Amino acid sequence: MEAIAQDTNRLYDRLAEAIQEKKDLRNPLIEVLRIAQEIFGYLPIEVQEFIAEKMDIPASKIYGVVTFYNFFSMIPRGKYTLNVCTGTACFVKGAPRLIQMLSDELGVNMGETTKDGRFTMSAVRCVGACSLAPVFVIGEDTFGRIDNKDKIKDILSRYE
Ligand code: FES
Image (tube, rainbow, N blue to C red; front, side, top):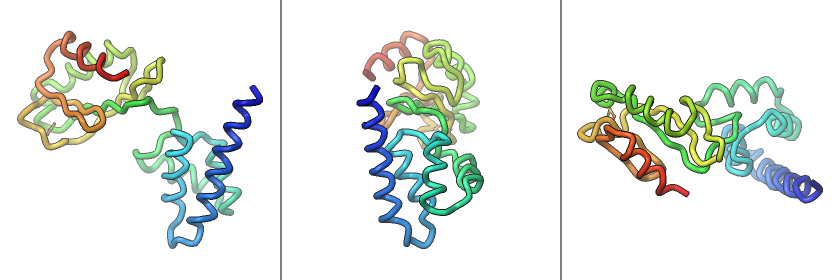
């Protein structure tokens, strides 16, 4: 238990350093939040309150920014983000069915993280691979024309 507390303290120390470093930028908050998310993996209320205190900004303002930008997350993210394209071409070619299959396989809905912490599933707009519709993306890898569960199982198993 003590070790975990020490690790957490170290993360807060890193964040405090980053705030110190960035606080003179013209608009430091977004940059500080980005770094905080990099350090903690997500932005829980405690982290937001820490930033509020250190930067002397109302916590409500920080909460407003965090919830405004999709990029920021208040729930722990998985090791990999699985982005399903919901652009027009993908939608027409079966994105809803693909989402259903992924959701069944992973046991999560859009925006949620799998129990084992491997994947967070989210939706994105056209990723520029319409000829492969329907498409999903994990990291730098794009997968297209996915029409059955066996293909999905095979792909997911490559991500440890
Ligand atoms: S609409 Fe999905 S890649 Fe373009």
